[in-house]
Length: 114
Image 1 (cartoon, helix red, strand yellow):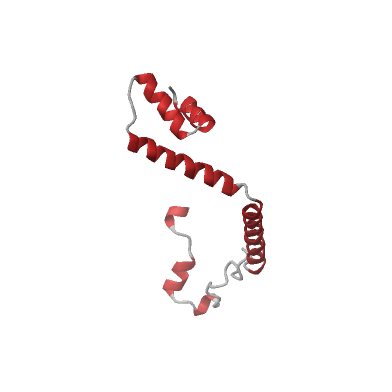
Image 2 (cartoon, one colour):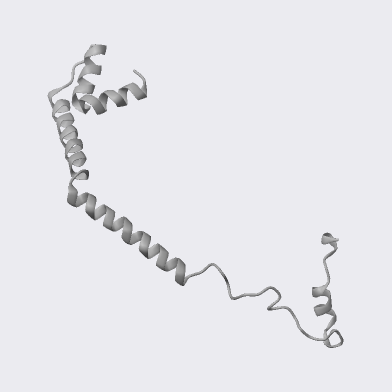
């Protein structure tokens, strides 16, 4: 059996019955402890499935999702991506006669950019 058909079978008839069917097809038997563990797994799966579909749980999830969206939008408004830094803000603004040689060299293009 491929992965897809195995998954479909498990979702359609449940974990326990699916594994029992597969084991019987290959001629293997399951121990009582294995069957008990599979029953627990199946019961947990059914409980989680039913829990997710409860109206109160759905309402809480929607409320939480809405709250997260609201908080995100509020954060984006207060923390804009625009910086207060402007190009050249930290550059040296001295007249050329007052600059030292190292400051003038710093303003020159490097040889590898020419």
